Amino acid sequence: MWKIRRRVLRLIMESSRSSYPDEFGAFLRAKHRVIYEIVLLPGTISGGSSVIYNLMMKPIDFTIVGSVHSHPSGYPIPSQADLDMFSKTGDVHIIVAYPFTMESWRAYDRDGNEIEVKVID
Image (cartoon, rainbow, N blue to C red; front, side, top):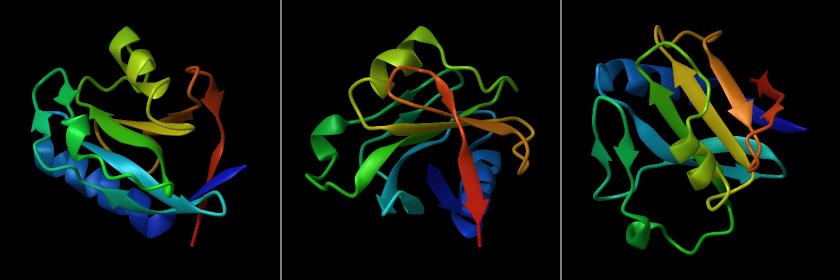
């Protein structure tokens, strides 16, 4: 089972609020299946309906296990573009939705299946 530190989830929510009405996007870093940090890629472009990552800037780093991005629309359901990215960029992906509260998010595996990620202190 994947876990995420509460402080990291709070940082994601605050970053998503700060980016609103545009999307926020980053990558997730974990050790022993515990997500403990986000990784911002230089050159990332955020817009109202997408985040474009400059994947050439993604470091070769095996602690990067997936991605996180926001959906200003309020629905944390992956789009086809999300599913395509999930399949190429890791094992755990989080979508946070407006109003960006600790309850307005979901996690998915690389195939787009919803998975449980436990919030820990």
